[in-house]
Amino acid sequence: MSLTVGYLEQIIKDRLEAALVQVQDMSGGCGQAFAVIIVSDVFKGKNKLMRHRIVNKALEQEIAAIHAFTQKGFTVEEWEKQKNDYQ
Amino acid sequence: MFRTTVNRIPLRSTFSQSILRPQTALRFLSSETKNAIESAVNSAKVVLFMKGTPQQPQCGFSRATIQMLGQQGVDPEKFAAYNVLEDQELREGIKEYSQWPTIPQLYVDKEFVGGCDIVMSMAQSGELTELLEKHDALIPEEPYDEAEPEKAADAEVKPRSRD
Image (cartoon, rainbow over all chains, first blue to last red; front, side, top):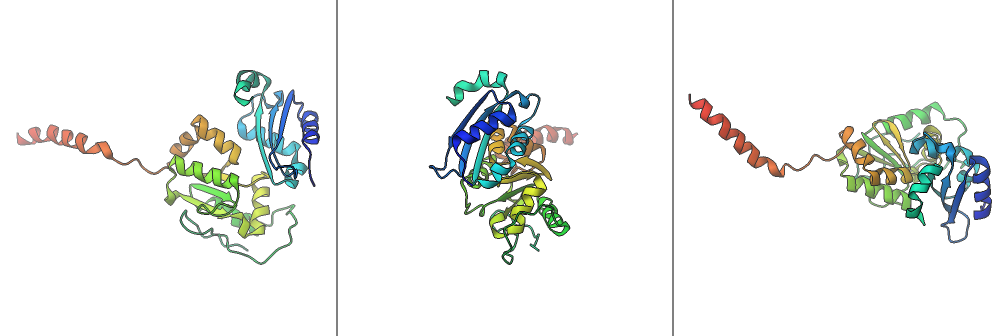
């Protein structure tokens, strides 16, 4: 299975009620490696491990099919404070 | 079944090469696999399941993670690494066991810590050092400054002993 940036963005938005999603294809085009930033209030009150688990669960099939997946999750409030570091 | 002897940093991974197995993901962990993984997790204070070996990581994420552990000063005596590429059963089994889809995976004192992303952000925030210190997993600091305080202590004791 090969994923596209657009498809991944869409399913993350849908499944994680994300206010903002940034997906970067790190694979050089083969669709096997992605780095994502997810801004969603489903992360409120959750530590890093719990946030990753939420994303891993929501994207279980997709992550299992690709080679590399790196993620950062923020709440809307955290993102407002930190977004300049990521742009 | 893979062996569960401890593999410390300079050595090779401890999970022996096993016969090729079909690449289907294990839906449920067999109790044998689960026991083998449990003893791997228990084999050292700091346990890393990785692709390749600490000397020769086979993936950038495993490389980055091992480098961070090195920078933190993890005591090699308290560290074990397992190469999931040497054993398909371990590779699939550890994902089930940790409920975590990617490799590397770090355990400290039998607790799952996370993968490369989490280890990296914990390293940046200082949480990783804190965690490793709390579990006494770091190389003890060289006692550079202790010579002088000891002399001072001696000096205090000696005059008293004369009376």
